Image (tube, rainbow, N blue to C red; front, top):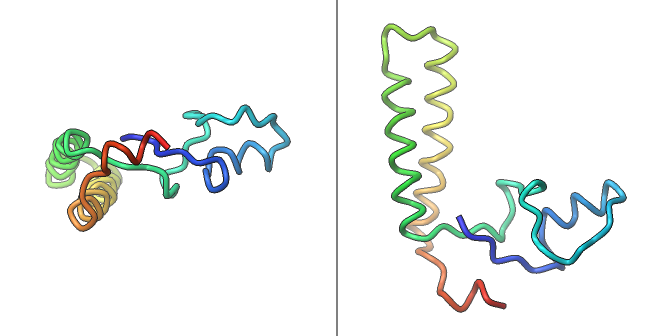
Length: 100
């Protein structure tokens, strides 16, 4: 994924400020939030997400795996499907978007 970070609305920056940490005015991957509007997936990123989703789907369908593991794999596959669906709906970001 790619971060199209803008200080005014970046979730990582808000999280740092809320904890009283200094604002270094750059993205902070350690504070990255999956709900941040600044996350953008390229087509190449989505190919990787699709591979991960298929692995989770296979784990969810494994009859020999314990039920909690199958349930977790199904939930992870569903989460990744949401990322893929949003990407397909909105498309990949323009190259210029990430440079602002």
